[in-house]
Length: 427
Ligand code: IMP
Image (cartoon, rainbow, N blue to C red; front, side):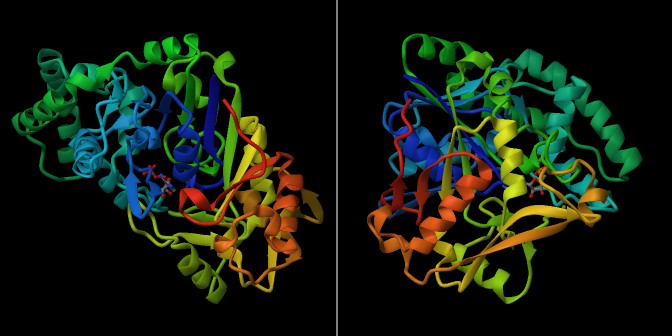
């Protein structure tokens, strides 16, 4: 009984899917609250690998209700394909519920994402899934919500008006062909029919579950450094991947949140453009990328690689009020003679410990590193955490101290059994 939020503490891809999947075993509901199919969560169960972009990672637990909350932007085609893909593999998808207030990613959003990115002098490196343009329409009050999509009259009316203005942009600003109303209406009406039965007021479902003493898990996508308010703006996504967004993105009050688990990779990665203070280049970056399989789940892009950054961790702790840390991919660091952690930045002869808002200031910051002894043993094959080499345990302890959050989980491989619980995280 209670609620747990799982969030990313870096630039996404920390392994939230795996941690969510494990915690979801005891959850009655698993809820996504922001983002869209820019996310890619990989889950390995027995010898099967599943990749999810929209559906909460709890879908693998029979009986658990998977909720796609109002804070998401949903590409219906992607969602339908994901549902079909799971059904082919024998996974029950009848427990998936979609908020009637979530916004729909339309084909003009995907097209605009590409056109806008091409036009930008300084690229963001978006996933081109239409995420930013869909959130733009939501805030501009020109979005189409799932509730409208499934109502043919409302959908037709809304689409007509919105498409008119989008077509003006396509023709007059980008000099490209306009989009056809009938084609979009036809295609999306088919999607609406397939999704209709899963649409609900999900805020009510969550509230009822909490009232009845059910355990609810909220699954974040991306990470704090990609947060539209608190990340490396403008090199960010268009939503808030921080724990506070659970309230608006799922439709619950702040008092409902009990615990917040921050997932942190044992080193740092980032896809797309933007600042990355502890970034590594050359052989070491390449070998860690290969060892960690650091290629985007959604776009396949190679991820940028760097050392652990305690400045980022402090930022994540404060913004999310983290109660637990889950360290992932510690096994990837095996075999390095030394490992480094950035403890702060040097700026004009002074040490700073907090992430600055200005990218100009950040450019002048030099990471200050603490070097620790590495280990050679393959951690992925060691059963008990107590049997880990002392250097690996010391590294975990140091992260805990610098982040000032207890480490409760250490993960050393994709499998469910490659997860060490240092303390239980109970609902
Ligand atoms: P968008 O979310 O597609 O608009 O992309 C904005 C930025 O966020 C780009 O740098 C993307 O690479 C990054 N991004 C978005 N989603 C994820 C994710 O799930 N993992 C890692 N990076 C992401």
